[in-house]
Length: 235
Image (cartoon, rainbow, N blue to C red; front, top):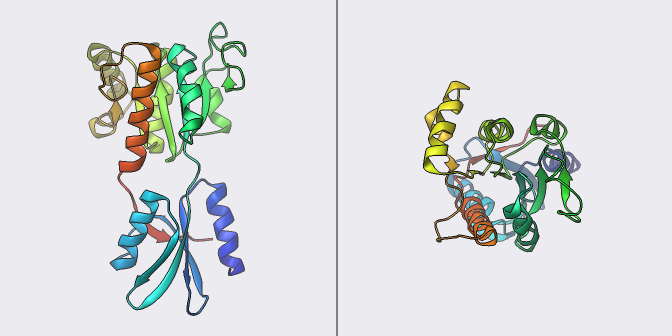
């Protein structure tokens, strides 16, 4: 690999940017591309598909045999609220390939006893997200029912372009949430990305069933997300 491209690859991975190393198998020449601005033609279309599937492999494009080495950031879930749904989701998420972090300032809920082995932060989201901000490969799940806790991370998730933003609550509760988010300067287009009531409609009743519906909703959002076009990364 070209050393400059290696440096760019390391930079992209550090910044949790999806990237693909494109290598011409006949010459050995390579270049690195990331999700971003348009790259036209058959290669751009193929890269878009690869960003979606996450699969590497060779391909014939316009007389060239290329190997596409796909590097996607590990998808993660940030849950706001150490509740029963979160306990069930903590068990399921790693099985589906997701890292998961739980944030809740309510120390009566956010205890090591209730979340053994979890990445648990007993702090306000405003502080917890400073060192580890949200990004496009993160799903945000807000389940406290408390606007003082949920609203800030929801706003941050929408502005950061998280691939999934879900919030627990009835349609009436969400209606009040929409009013608050509009007052914070978000647009209806941004707010429309929120999955609320949270999860796929499977008739879930118990916390574990709701966790299943939420995880399924997250997986669907990840695999069907609107994929950006791509651009060559600048060092």
